[in-house]
Image (cartoon, rainbow, N blue to C red; front, side, top):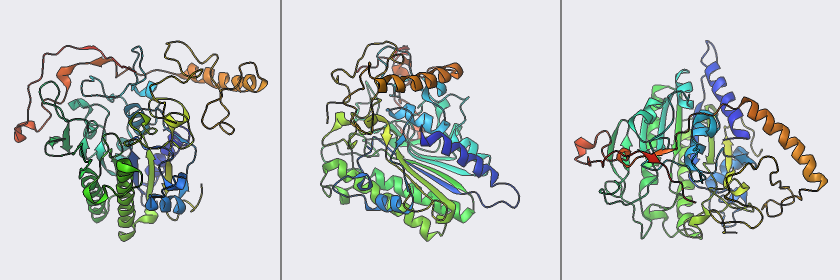
Length: 440
């Protein structure tokens, strides 16, 4: 995350490392609750009129609400890579130099992933004695060398990709679900999702994984980092049976209500274990709501323009809440997009836009519908400041090796580790690396 993100993460890690000194306080537990495609306007505390998120609203009231929190990218994989490394996607390699590259993420056929040279948050915390677990979606490369347990995590229950499917296991394999080093099944097989009704028990499974991990670490008296990266709000959205049909916002709202209930249970366990004052919890989303999935399977970006896949406010401004009782004072703190043109605003041409960028005044125009006139004094004054920042950034910018350029159907999830035990190994096709196509 950018803006409020990179700074707090670095300070937090340094503080945690310092807590390991002799006579220092016990290192705080850290919970990072990352939602998938949840928009700025999806929570009651941000003004969603249905007010169906009482636990998250209470979390905000007891902690700090960030109304101006931004992701580093409006897509899943680059945003997650930035969140866990503290480095922009162009630095950590989660970008592509292919033409028409806006939709750069990690589908099954992507060859790349998180580079070995990147230092992820769990790797840094391991040096301070933390146990770390990822629950849910990884999305930073699915080949063995990119496995999360190779990058600092001690445990994993979840999947390398989103819950897309079902596939025929011939042209494209169903996506695996892992426990630690080995797959334990595949989506739509051992882990069913009913696309007609939206029923799936995955959020409950992910919740139990989180609760069990927290209990075990408390018994062991070991500080822990839990990265709870669930994907129920990513289309096709899903919810378990008790929540289906309970929201005034349809199936997407059902998923949000179940997430809210789960967050409530996580915070309740912290209270029951009496570790709230030694636990930092941060809730946010990887990018804005996917309006291409709206209205039934997409969220709300509030008053902001566009959503996921765009760098307008709706794509990059996210809900964010920080909660740490005793440390953080309480109480602080239109669907033609994405993928379509906004007249006079968007363009798909591959050209340099930093010399004469569109500039908006978000106080007057949060929907970014009326760019400032290029000839106005206000525009010229803002441009001078923007130009200086861009020039300073470009002087120190060292791009990482692009990880999202090459695709190959042979690297898809045909035979993940553990498939032999389950009898679920599939035969990959011939290896034919090719330049990835990123359609708009």
